[in-house]
Image (cartoon, rainbow, N blue to C red; front, side, top):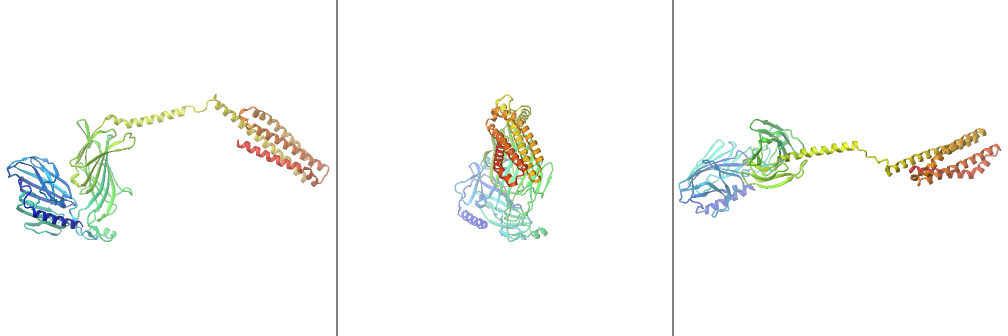
Length: 608
């Protein structure tokens, strides 16, 4: 349990402080300490005004800031400034001797050495996450959201404190309970402790404040910001959010009916909106998730800012998650500048969402192809790396500067600078590539439409093709003539059937005469075709089959004529039908066999 671990840390801290008999640093004195803790959002923002005096004989150039371990582990942002002169001081984590492990220590480099009697006022801003613990940890849909803050009424410092006071700004006046110490005053939504005088080093007086918080405990478990810089006039920003409600978890079932009917008392612990404060000239804004576009958003803009109020598809109670993406375009002239022969992109680092805590942020700055000599300037420590991204019409790819940081709060939404060198000639690479591509396409089309890709009429291949086409045409004529011959044969057979039915001998003879004349004419037509096939080299493999076909057809003619003569003579001599059939039986068998052979040869030629 988080609360129990914090209590254990407090006990260890008190035990450690109780055994510290000699302060580790005694040269400096804090003549006046004013602390203010703002817990109106999901994180605690502590501002301190420290007046530092050096009464000792030795000069001091370093100041130590201390926090209880359970606070130091959740420190997201720390800034130390001086008013006169106005300057940001360097702060780094330290591990000096004599300080126990239950205390986190940070070293501040003073702008000037403090000699005996010198004084300096430091303005400290520290933001802590995960210090407002839901209590109880699980609530029903209709219960209010209560959180607990654990701090010290006295300022924990390795130096003597002559005077100090503490003010805690609460979200509202609804306070369940708070630690009542000497000089404690509650005025509306502000709780004050002190002033306390002449506190020895490492003084610590634990306090607990239990109060209602309606703040959205929205935490982005992961945020990926892709900032794509195009020298054609636009900066495209795409942000992918994985958001979870880190407040008290919902106990029991969720009732949509109760929530819609009475959203305030029956859904007060949920948050339904997130506000993103975008740059003033943001355009082409969209808000969507894996399902598609989400229409529940509102946008307002003026000359100073653009505000996007987004509403998830469903209200988020404690422990619930949602995933969405927002994107927008920015004018390049507002963010791209030149300095000392380099260009640099000056753009904000953190999320534009108000009061959003980000556990891990990945900022990807995609520079134009051809960028080189890349460097990054950030106001705080981040993990840096570089990648390559390929997009449309890219050859070498676009360099990507990747910046990563954990435990990010709105205080980190400061500007970063990405410096790089870029030649304007590289701007012409993609247009030239497109022009060249279209030019090659048009030239290819012109050549294709105007050039003759047919085979040359004098080439052996073309001549062989012509010869083969003539052979194929001749074969088709031969097939047609043979089919006509077979039709004439069928007509002659039909005349014999009519003779057996009517007994009209003269009509049968006339049919034979006309058929005989037709077959002679067809035979004359075949002669030149056969002569061509025999003389053509291209028909050497098919000519024997054609000759065989003609021979078989001639033989079939002779057999049919002989059959016809035998049948007619039998009718003239008034022979019986059985006698006639016996006389032509052998001829009929040969006729059937020849007809089958002819059809097989025709099928063979047709396949060729």
